[in-house]
Amino acid sequence: MTDRRSFLAGAGAAGALALAGCLGTGAGNGSDGDDRTESDSGATTAASGDATGDGERPLGGHPAARGIGEDPTLGPAVGETGDAIVAFEDPSCRTCRRFETETFPRIESDLVGEGVAFVYRVFPIVFEWGKPASQALEATYARDDDAFWALKDHYYAEQDAFDAGNVLDRTASFLSSETSVDADGVVADAEERAFDDRVRADVEAGEAAGVSATPTFYLFSGGEFETEVTGAKDYTVFAAALGY
Image 1 (tube, rainbow, N blue to C red):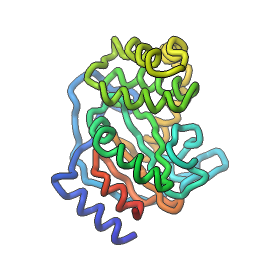
Image 2: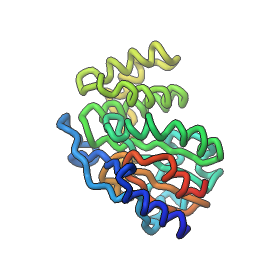
Image 3: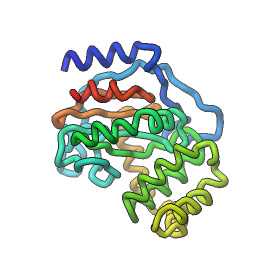
């Protein structure tokens, strides 16, 4: 553990890896202003937090894992593995886009392929369109998990094309052409915030864990909290922290 954490501290200090996360005006209250960034100290370690409150203690009872069983997960279910990355991301966050396009593909192919669970949790704090997009993601996941991952990728790949006025129309067009889910139903649910309980559960878990910028990741090894990573860090940071 000491070697991994020493590596992470060094990586956080390296200029090549010092990609800061996106800040908002508060969870769920992002605005359509310019991105702001915070100074990123790299990966940091912290003690495990409270229990989940539902009688279970997945991943050591860390706050980031509260209610995690209902979140989109690649790889094994959290209850089947002790190695996990719990990600708090905003579809509208530009730093999240860098992570998704530059780092995530290798995490998916290498770490998830080795049995690490990757859990995606929404934390919309940057631009206003991230909030309805988060609602649409939850509505899509409730219908089909493959469509969820496709829509998530679409938001980041075409991020510059979205704003608060067009996000749901563009979401419907993508879902209609690229998936088999009921696109109109997803949009209706997003407009009515039918899955707001899921969005709120993610935001509250992130707030309890201390998320203040996106993307923020909580890494678990052997079922125990290992470290926190903020920003679009390189794949090697994640692999080293988890011992791969």
